[in-house]
Image (cartoon, rainbow, N blue to C red; front, side, top):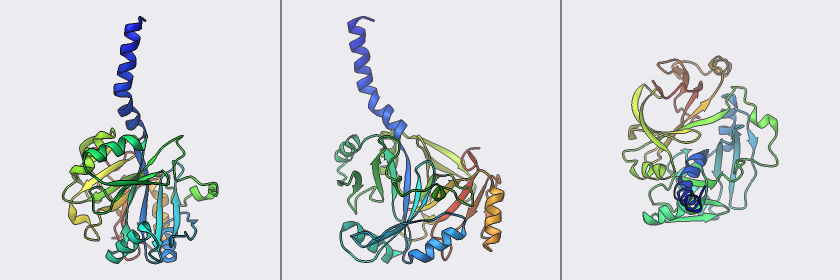
Length: 295
């Protein structure tokens, strides 16, 4: 290869490399769920067949419990006791409005390109302890971001044990997050910038309908109409969890006395859906692989 061709190839790699890496790294990380009574909500998730990892009191008044999956995704039950800093204050404000999913965390290849894009859009943000978050009151303020790094990410801890990843219901991954609102222009623009593929598909839950879906390198984000919001203004409304066998989930539901009409199959019978309830703060779909999205 001549020197000129080598230089040209290097230029192409520089030009296209960032977006390619971003597309590879863009994936779901975890969903923090704001709760008032941490013990009660942890018991409810255990009743649904999840293993619960205990959290710890934080200096800023926050306490949490973890539902962890082997691929690094997670659901986090979290509460705030006192207003000690911005984060604990945000959770107290959210809980004053109502319990439920509070934020969506995404893995990205690097934070600097994301910060530059936000700057071009005039979206104020801040970086703390290796995480990039959006200042409250801005577009995208219910999302935050972590660099994927070596693939381990923010959801691994030295205190993790094998039993924390073994769930009686068989769940192995957070495979989709559901959002509900009238306008997702900012989210879709950012996801395209980060390498997501946007599509319109027939989704099977919470009911069969056409909906926009963002396909990440791992996981999907489903965009639903605003009327699916359980708490007005809280746009994260549900999750899809991958399981190998719906019969196992059904047995857990029966043993916990969770019965129809609460438990409903999707029209193609490849996923089982639990609607929000008194102690269940979001839609929860247990889905076979590839079972919830495409025709």
